[in-house]
Length: 88
Image (cartoon, rainbow, N blue to C red; front, side, top):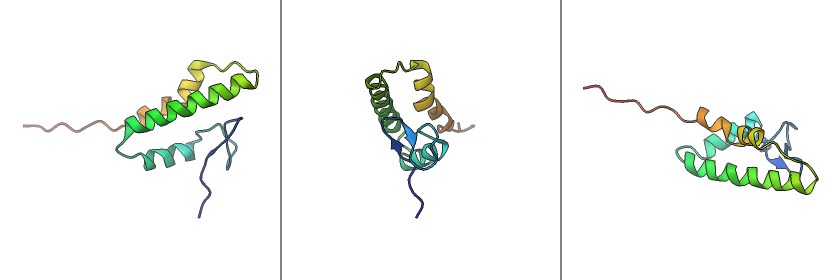
């Protein structure tokens, strides 16, 4: 069984591939786990982003809010598929 791509705190790097979390594999796993529940996924990722920023502040850093938003939430629009409209 493959290891899940989970965050390593307080660095917020992936425990498996050491990329910034959520890494592409974690994004795929999350999109699969939350399939059909995009709002719940957005809330989960927003909470994770908040925790990551708190960890960075505790370590003396100053996270770039725009970059953090792009990293944690920016990829969500890629998981949404446009709805097909019926033609009459």
